[in-house]
Length: 109
Image 1 (cartoon, rainbow, N blue to C red):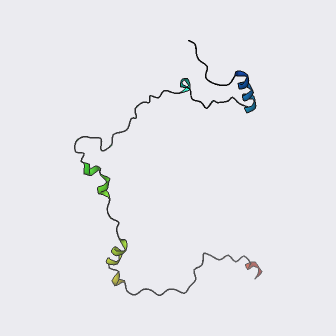
Image 2: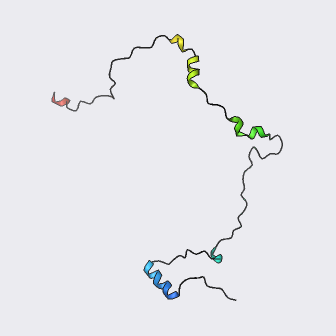
Image 3: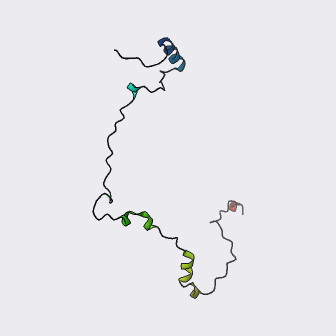
């Protein structure tokens, strides 16, 4: 038995369709001769620290043991001895400027 043609429209209609498209039509149907082989090579994964069989204890691999409660930084800052710093400074009554002022009309004065 010879090669069976893939399912499509007649050759005259194929030529007319390609003319209207302005290119060769690519069929969206998937036929077995057009598919690639499904057998893929096995991945080569590099060995990690958990690859060894001896002295590989579970508690060293478990990430749940690395998690700790969040630290309260404000309590640590208060306990570091901020009482001996004295009274707070008075606020300055000077407006901040964004930088040097460019006097664009200075040549008129």
